[in-house]
Image (cartoon, rainbow, N blue to C red; front, side, top):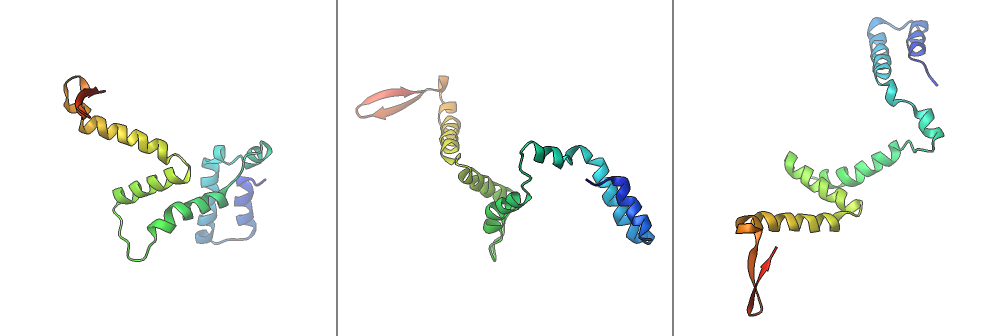
Length: 131
């Protein structure tokens, strides 16, 4: 385990110049300000994974492999839409999402335009109400 004071005292012992020391002090200040999130020893003891490698792999799979195509140009909205769909497919939730999406589109494009949200459709020779 490291200490924030230890980082700073190490810089002092090494006789770093003021510009070199600035980076060390900035780093120590950042770590000190975020110490509530840096309890890795507790997370490891509880069996939680510290998965920076896994996270980097997922980022490469979801983001880089799709967005970093030679010549591709993405708007922010377009890139976000594609990445959301890739994430849904990767985690197995795409089919459930797509059913929800179709229901919302049906409601927006059809049901909301009719009184009592009831759409009359032809089914064979009979008219039936769809809710």
